[in-house]
Length: 302
Image (cartoon, rainbow, N blue to C red; front, side):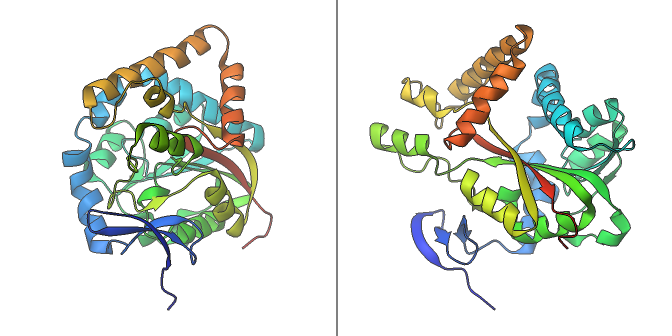
């Protein structure tokens, strides 16, 4: 058995954050046990860590539906079949799948949290209440598209997840991955200019720390061809403006609302395409708060 090893970048909460030579991306060491992750996500996540997530998302649903529409519109360009079947791994309360269903996608979700999965079911979303790695892939069938938002950073084995996603996709099927964009160039500027430590580290919730380069490499390693890279607004710009939201929920909520207002103004001004071009350029230079990658399964890659 090969052991995780690499340069130690930081230590936090009893974990080493290493630039792993085995995995080719940054992650914590040791990796939490399956039982610890089960306790964290099946019960505690929506109860103790994100107790306001569902209510907050409901109040912002106009904004989130606009974001979902962008992703679904992009997927539609690549999925040409008449029937469109989509799997959301870590679907949470099912907001994305609900929007997908609105556009006639055949939807299916996987979610370990009882609270989130039950909410999704109440809104007509079929969900398996378990971790993806526990499921029998053959029973799931094949999909035209797979969506994963803020999942891989929580996973004990991202490579295995992507390998299994490749198996589940039909030939030329599409996967859309979104993860935090960490150790990115703007974060490094903030650290030097404002004398900040690595404020984005959050072990053990966040096991892995990807950027556009490492996420691209991981996808290609597991049989995917990159189609499009996109980012989200670089929140570090607020820090460089002197608006310190780190550790301050009140300020954090304010800048979140400001970002929403800006993006909705793009939409209301018929500027969605322009906004996306800006965010795609951000992706090219490696900045933005999240890394979003659209990739295609390479035919007969598994």
